[in-house]
Length: 312
Image (cartoon, rainbow, N blue to C red; front, side):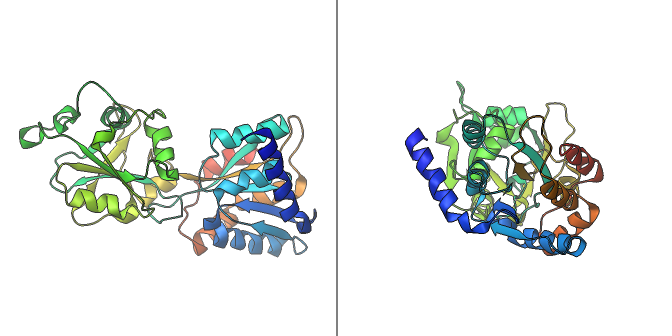
C-alpha cells in the first residue's frame, strides 16, 4: 500500500472506532468467531464482573488493521497473518506483533478454519500422500504428472492427475500453498480446475465424477464417491488421517489454527487486562466454553501451556 493511501486508511479506521473508548478490551477480526468471542466474554465476566468489551468482527482481513492503527487490543484471525499484514504492522510500530494460537480449526465446517483434506476417487488405490508428492503434483516441471509417478500401476499408471480445488486467490488456497507447496506460485495450471466455493463440496464432487482427479477440500465435503488420503509432512511418514481427534491433537499436518495477535513492544509486558483475558481463553474453562458454542476444537494441554508462555 502506498504511504498516502495507508495513512488515509489509518485515519478512517481510527475515526470509525473513536467511540469505543479505552476501558474496554477491543477485539477486531474474523466474523466467523462471533459466537466463540461472545462465549469467552460471558465466561470472563463471571470471574471479572466489571469487564467490558468492544467487539468489531468484520473479517480476518480487518483484524490486523485494527491492531496496528491502535483501535484494537486484540486481532483474532481464522488463519495466520499474511506477510503483508505483518509488514504493515511493522511499518507502523517498528516491531512485529505478538502471535498466540488460541484454538484449533474445525475438521470440516466452512468459515470455521477447516482442515484441508485431499480426496481421490473411491476406486483410486492410493491411500496416502506426502508434501513432497503434492509439490511434485502441483509445481511446474518438465513432464505432466501421472498417477504412476505416485506409485500406482495398471490402468492408473499412465493417467494424468487432474486437480480440483478452491479458487487460487482464496484464503484456503493461499494457506495450502504456503503449508504444503513451499509457497510456490508456479503451478501446473493446465491440470487445475478452480471453484469459487468455500464449502469445498464442488471440488469433491468434481473428483466423484472424475476417476483420475484429486480434490483440495475439507472434511465436511466428503461424499460416498470419494475417499480422504492420509497425509505426511515428510517423505517417510508418519501418515495421519483427517479425523477430528487428529486435528485437535495437532498431528494432522493440514490442520489449521485460530490466532490472536497483539501489540507488545519489545521488553514490555502485555497489558494486564488483555493478558488476563487471554489466560482465560487458553484455560480449560475457556476452551470448553468455546467448544460448546461452535465447531472449533480445543488445543491440547501441552500446546496451551506453550502458548501461555508467550504472554510472559
